[in-house]
Image 1 (cartoon, rainbow, N blue to C red):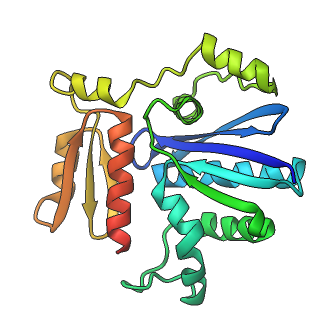
Image 2 (image 1 turned 180 degrees about the vertical axis):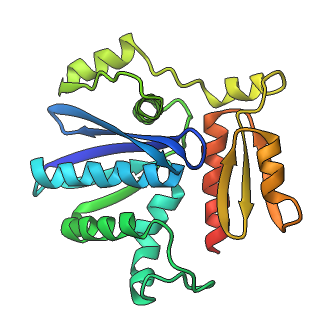
Length: 240
């Protein structure tokens, strides 16, 4: 059975804010890059959109292929593998809080795509911003789309793609470099968990206004990578 390997990532400048997503689809012969943007979206919505777009493309062009989906979002992967069926049984309410499931429309689309692929879909968790060439490339595509930058999406032979990555490696800095720069860098954003919802504010004043007088968690972060990781962490906590 033929296989298509997928890598996806999403980004938002603020949470919500201008959003972007990126995906790489690879067979044994060819590679196709996909990317897109939304004027206002959360990081999790863009993570979901990347997977939706990639799987939709697979069912159109690579129908009948097995699919190996790589993503760095535990929110997306846990949702597909574990939470979706429970949400359906609970009429799209969360099991513990009985609140409506956030991003329901994205999840309903993913449910249809997942069921269309059946046992041909395998999920793989990858570490975000860890020097993985394909994952870092997806991050670069997502961020560029969110910023409204011109994108040169690759479509061609695997050998040509590998050469492109070697000649023009992704711009995303490694996590270790980000950590070393944190002591001198200004805040990238302030991430908070308030009443079960996750927010990202560009200034401390905005974050302080949001969390003041409430039972909340919040933290200053110094990079897009840290913001993404903390948004995912707080999102998972909100679902427990």
